[in-house]
Image (tube, rainbow, N blue to C red; front, top):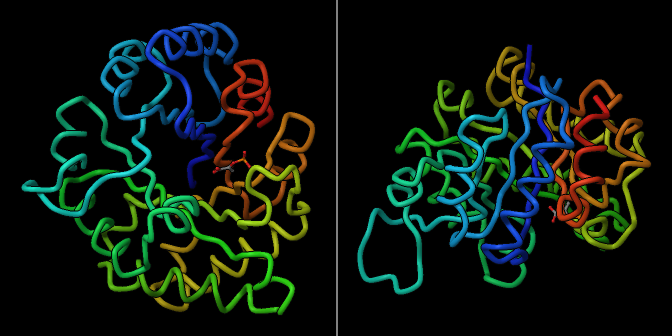
Length: 250
Ligand code: PEP
């Protein structure tokens, strides 16, 4: 059975002391044996600290980005090996903010995914359409092309290290959520697309998270949809009460 997952993307928020406070609060507020796998993604500078703090808990730590090269003259960048050496073996790739503000293309993301997989990391791969795509009725084509360009040359075995996160850009940080029906419709389409490109077993096994203004008030209804396997949470992940309520809504 595919994994249920709730992941919190902290983005460029929380310094070291604040990270400590948020993690302590999460430890007390999350259920002891959560029904979903819980992941938090603090900034690079706090990853090692978070990993050490959470070692004894059922909370995994992920990075928010990673460079595609093994090492070298890439000032300011972080490699897969560096992440793994801190204990972190999950990375978010393709977030819409990376695509929009840092020019990350499908081709670059394909390289990043391949590098992460070579290091036996798990990738939370984000993708999703802009509002104009949805208004123009292009959202299925756009999502299919994002998946195809970055992931469809993978070998079948690599899919065990892939978590998908469908995040319609118009719903990220806007308070505008896709309805549970819109999320289900797209997630079912994604599963069908993967079944066609690979096989039914891979499509059945891959976890597909929904991301975009998930809050305690809407999480249960969204997560209840059969093809929604959890959420990638932005804003609400910064508040321990809200994140725990979302994580506990399975
Ligand atoms: C995100 O940035 O991945 C996200 C889903 O943000 P928010 O929950 O704030 O919409």
